[in-house]
Image (tube, rainbow, N blue to C red; front, side):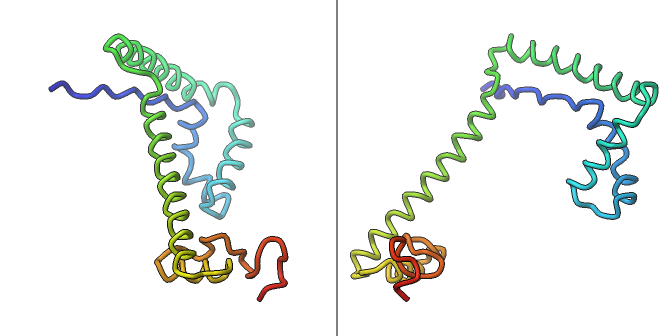
Length: 152
């Protein structure tokens, strides 16, 4: 049986190559490892770099892009489907969300069948069946959605 074709991954841009090589220095300068702070500082530094300082990274990026383009052509010529991996990942995520929604509906139905007469009772019955808190339509502060804080 033939091995399944794997779509080539997109190459890094010149900025991402530069950021990968300078992340430690940027982290020390920023004083935090928080990604958003480091990326913001990195973006500012990258914009401030001269064209000659950016050139080695842009050259490497161009080479990676050319390699990617040839690999993609081979992939397509071999009968590979572009975007198949992304589509499969999305379908798996949607199936998981559908399964969770179905479980929540079943838990609500079961708790109502067990005699739960209010949203608070549905939530309590759902929790006793192992459902996370809040399943069953109960609002976080108790009561129903129409009367808000009236029913405690």
